Length: 125
Image 1 (cartoon, rainbow, N blue to C red):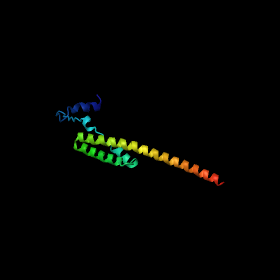
Image 2 (cartoon, rainbow, N blue to C red):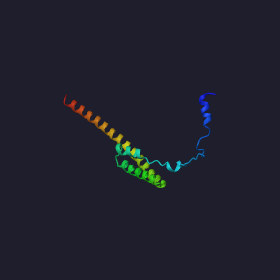
Image 3 (cartoon, rainbow, N blue to C red):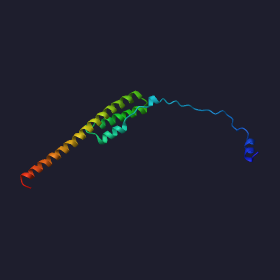
């Protein structure tokens, strides 16, 4: 018999032979999974805040997070739903207004250059 095996065999059972106890924690994932849309609201507040909808959405997102921390899942879901609708509106309006502004600037530049070239042509430059 190898020396290590002999020493292990001589130790015997563990000193404290009390039965092991376990703790089970049940987490209900369906109740705690309420998205609060804070990141999306913050993005809309910082970048697409044309009509202040991003800021209002951010306020509702914070209210939703507060309700979730308190344990009021129905209130949190209600505020989160409102924040989501406001974020969608802010995103759509922000993108449309940004694209419209870019088109207006491009058209103004083209019209200005065209007028300038006609003016220079009349005066013989």
